[in-house]
Amino acid sequence: MAVLMREAIGGTLRRARTARKRTLRDVSRRARVSLGYLSEVERGRKEPSSELLAAICEALDISLPDLLTEAADTIAEAMAAARPRRPVGLRHMDLRLAGAPDPLAPSLPSLPSLPLLPTGHPVAPQPVGAKPVAPVRAAA
Image (cartoon, rainbow, N blue to C red; front, side):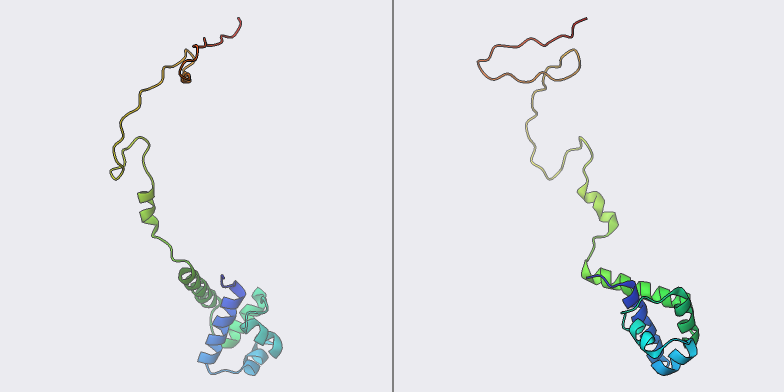
């Protein structure tokens, strides 16, 4: 399952707070947000507004871009761990050019080409023993 943005932001805020040896109570007072709400934000249960994030970042002495960059890195790491992807440059190996022979495929004998009607469409093959059918022409 994918990591939600609010979970990544909350985890980043908690790591920043604990790295600075600050308590929830201290940060909540400086940011002017309730202790319970700050706890919910750190646990990824609440989606904080941009104003609230700016206040919490100021209380922790970190910049908002640094917070968002670290949260984005957390999401990218979780996605990479959940679903390993092939490098983009190797996709060309799955593609084949029209008409280019596949060097790994066994060579097949070429099939005879079908005759064409005056309209340029191929004539459908007739079953064995069937009478040939003349093409229908539009009335002038």
